[in-house]
Every structure is written in C-alpha cells, then in structure tokens.
Image (cartoon, rainbow, N blue to C red):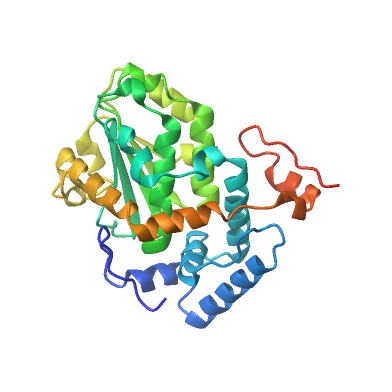
Length: 312
C-alpha cells in the first residue's frame, strides 16, 4: 500500500505507516514487495486451504503483525485457517448486526481512536453491571475477533493493549468466566489473528476482583502473564495510556465509552466489513489434503479438545 486510507474510527500518528514498516525491517519497499510475493505464492500452493485469494494490503498487515517474519506469518496464517474449522464457536456463523445486541447491554467495548506514541492500538472494555446473568464469554470474544478483523483491514500498528475495567463486575458475570475459554480465545487472537499484545490492564474495584484475577492467571500463557498490569485506580492507568486518549468514563478527553462503542459497532455493521467477515469464514482448511503428521505436529498441543484427522 502507498498510504493509510482515512478511517471513520481510527486516527494515525504522523508517518505511522513508514515508522511501523521500518521497525520491522521494511525501510526497503522492494524487500516488502518480495516478502509479500513470497507469502502470496506460498498461500496459493497450500492444497489444504479452501480459499487462496487475499488482498495484498491484508497480507501486508498480517506480515507486519508477524514482526516481518515470513515463516511466522505462514505458521499463524495456517493456524487461522485451521482454527476456522476447529473453533467454529469463535470463527463461524456470524450475524454481526444482531448477535451482539445482548452483549452491549452488559458491557461496552471500543477501539480508542488515537494510537499510542509507539503506534499501539488500545482496546477498552467496561461492564455496566446490568443483565449480568445473560453474559456470554464466547460472545464477548467473538466481538473482539470482529474488531481484530477490522484492524487487519484498516489499521497499521505495532500491536495493541487491552484494558479491562472490572469495577462493575458482579457475581453473575464472574460465574460465567472460564479459564479454558479465555485461553483458547487469547491463543486464537494472538497466534492466529496475529494481534501482538503489549499489555493487559485490569482495573480493580469489584469485591470479586480476586476471583477474576485467579481465573485470568490460569488462562494466560507465561509470556502474557508477564504483561498483565493491575491497577487499583483509573489514575494508575494514566502512567501507561495518556489521559487525553481515554474516554470520559476514565477521566479522559475522548467521547464516552458508549459513544465510542456505538461508533465502532456502526463500522462493524458496514456492508464492506460484514462481507470481509463472511469471506474469512470461508477461509478454512480441507484436512483431507494435509499430511496427518504435519497436523499432529502443529496442533496436538493447542488448547481445546481437537480430534486428530485421519487420511486414508
């Protein structure tokens, strides 16, 4: 791509495209073009991929989110296509315009418009404390995936930071937390969608916070556990994320969480993005065309109860 296109919900830092590319060794555009050609050619030759036509801008972002490593991009892309088949509860049968409406009564989730100074995007979730008995953890992560797929179309960043405001967490919500589900979802987001996670911020304040923290620590990998930051107040968050970037709910200068969440959801419901989500649902694998030994090597240790696929 020659430049970052204007986006209704994202702002970009000055020279963000060039700075991010350079940080991953792509100050030479010819090298980037060669790596994209290689990546695209590799996809076209994989017999188990059901879909092989992908936009080059999408593939470039995927390569960038893989830190400019072609081999890492290949491995993650293979996982993404495989997980579409193995994790349908997260990656298939989206009804973007309708399925998340109950979720939005329980929590607001938004992408902050302004990136950090080092070109990371911030994702914030806060709970309303209402309709807690109707909270569905899988639904929450499905929406994060929809947002992540939007980033793969429109953003160009070094990765992201996740902020979870736990001040309004209730017992009804805590009862729905499941470390296995969280672990599977985060594995998918990080290892398949390629979303590099710089920090996970949790703001305490609920009397159930110790339970939440225990569940999260069970779910996180050792690497992600090292990136977990606990805040005893919103003010503590300002040491990591500029106050002026945060929503009004957090004492910041941005629109409220509800306003930002509504803006984002409007974009997620655009015809363009719904078409992209549906196309990604079709980017699964035909395991009859993959070597069984290779499948076992790559996926037997992944979270969940995956069945080994046999080929006659």
